[in-house]
Image (tube, rainbow, N blue to C red; front, side):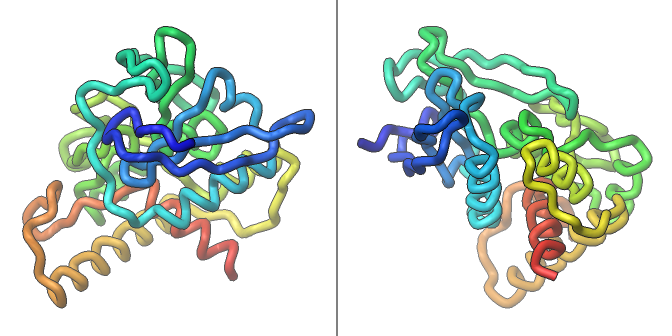
Length: 239
């Protein structure tokens, strides 16, 4: 039985994945909101191969339009309001939306990747380097545009800017006993990937004109760090 997304209320897609110590867990995806619903403690029950499957699904849907999160998120089980908070792990701080009746939690794709150690926070030199080449990105937590030429954190939700990069992914996969030998990547590679994404979006807009895209600033198109990182890692794995 499908359940409504806590944000957009559309039916979520259910994926049955292996759990630690055997058994299975059912994880609900909302690809429109780029979010995941975990029943109570399900995020801690995922087997390593389940985390790898989630990563692949996020990559497969990385370019789909993201619906901004609603002002009020509701538990798909009791329909009560979800309380926003923060959790902190080694790779950074991330936003959580929890049911106060302990039915579960809603996480954005970006928050899940921070929780599982696939990302790290950007350093100031990296922010400056990317700002010089791109200027504007989307916050991976809430989707709001962040002008890197003026800000070093999201002014809307105050999340630190995080980067999904190959070295962080490799370390995370090693910790889940899924080590993959791949070449390391520098922040310059990620900046170049962001530039390539912006250029491709601009080319597509010229060839198929559409209404202005929210987040566009002048001639610089806002891009998403999470999507760029997923694309970069995917290209390395496919080499």
